[in-house]
Image 1 (cartoon, one colour):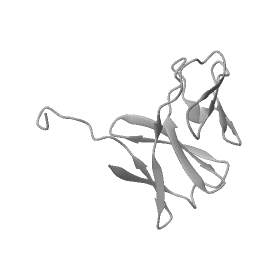
Image 2 (cartoon, helix red, strand yellow; image 1 turned 180 degrees about the vertical axis):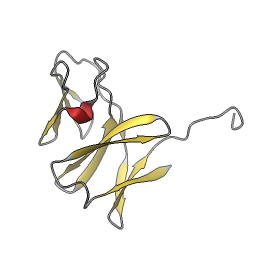
Image 3 (cartoon, helix red, strand yellow; image 1 turned 90 degrees about the vertical axis):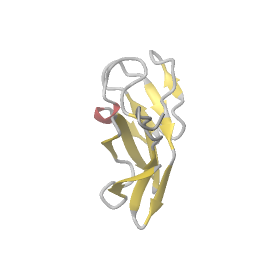
Image 4 (spheres, one colour; image 1 turned 180 degrees about the horizontal axis):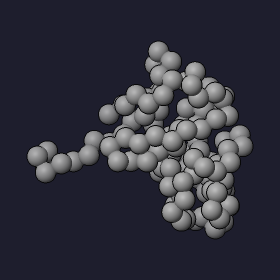
Length: 109
């Protein structure tokens, strides 16, 4: 289910922001007008990647320095070994939408 997040105008190219949808912590990055969404918590340790450094399409974890490509979640350097979960995005009417799976509740099972 695509959920609206922030406007592309509020997130200039080369910038990132944190967002939470259905208890899923995300980091959204604007790379040359394309929005990417990845899990916000580092796959190596409990660190918030939105507090790390974004250079080009690479986010560096602020805790241990692991690096990831925000376009596909791929690990680019140790100590991280597991990729980040990525979420599809689209931009409509200047708003970044992120496709988050619906949370199954006992009523929907």
